[in-house]
Image (cartoon, rainbow, N blue to C red; front, side, top):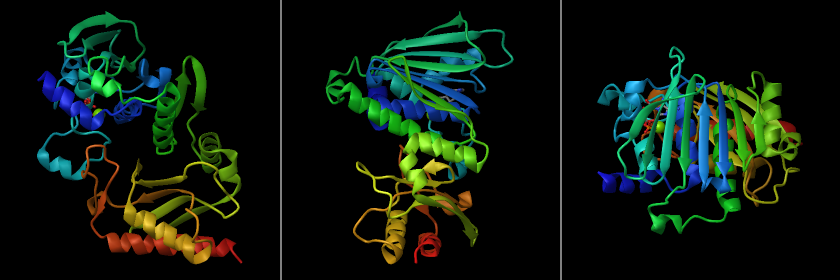
Length: 327
Ligand code: ADP
Ligand code: MG
C-alpha cells in the first residue's frame, strides 16, 4: 500500500506547487469563502492551507487519508458530469505518503476540532482533540523527506516559491468570490479580498498580473450558440518582459488547450500582430455536457465535444473585439 501511495504521489505531487493546488481545490470544494496559504522555504519545509469550509467530521478524518476515499462521487455515472474540482480521492493519501501531514478539521456544528497525523508511510495517528475555528487546516511538512530521489529534483526555494505562487494565482483568478492570502516565510505576499463586481475584479487583476496589463487591455463580454466568453485582452502596447500571460478558463477551471490557443493567436494575427504571443485572461462558459474534463489526472486539459464550434466562436469574438479598438 505504501508503494502504491508513493507511485500515485508521482502523478499528482511533483513539487510544492502541486500540493498547494490540490489542497486549495479541496478547500474550494468544501465551500470555503476565505483561504490562507503559508509556505516556508518555497514550500519545501512547509505548506499550510487553512479554510473556513464545511470541515470533516471526526469519524471521517482518518478515512480522508486513505486511497479512493473520496466523498465526491456517489456513482460512476457522476464521473461524466463532475462539477467539483477534485474527484478521485487520491490527493491527500498521495501527499501524505511523501511528507509529514497533519489534518485538523472542525465542521461548523462541532464544539472543537480533531486532528490526525501521518509521517510518510505510517498509519494515521489520532484523532486527537485540537483547537481550531470552523473549517480545515492541512499542514504538509518536509515534502519528499522519505523519497530522496524525488527531493533531489526540487529546485531552489525561490523557484519553488514562484511555481507555488503561480499555482495560487491561477486558482485566485478562477474564483473572484473567494478571499485568498499567501505568506512566504512569515511575510505577506498576496492578500485578496473577495471581488464582487468588475471594479473589484480589476483590483485583483492588478495585484496578480500587474498594473501594466490592466492599463493596456480591453474588456470583452459576449455570448453566442450557448457559449459565453468574458475577460481581458491585451493590446499591442502591452509588452511583458518575462514569461507569457495567457490564462484561459473553461467553466472556472484554468486549462491549456492547443485548439483554443491557436484560435486566439490567429485572431490576434488577423488584427494586430503575428510575430508575438498575445496576452489574455479569458473565461469560457459552456454547458458541462459539451466538454469532457476527465482527460488527465491534473486536469489541465479538456476535450470539447464540438471543438470546431468552440474554435470559430473564440476566433470570431476575439477578432471582433480587437477590431473595434484598432483603426
Ligand atoms: P478528492 O478531493 O478527490 O475527493 P482528496 O484526497 O483530495 O480527494 O480528499 C479526500 C477527501 O477529504 C475529500 O473527498 C473530502 O471529503 C475531504 N477533504 C479534504 N480536504 C478537505 C477540506 N479542506 N475541507 C473539507 N473536506 C476535505
Ligand atoms: Mg482533492
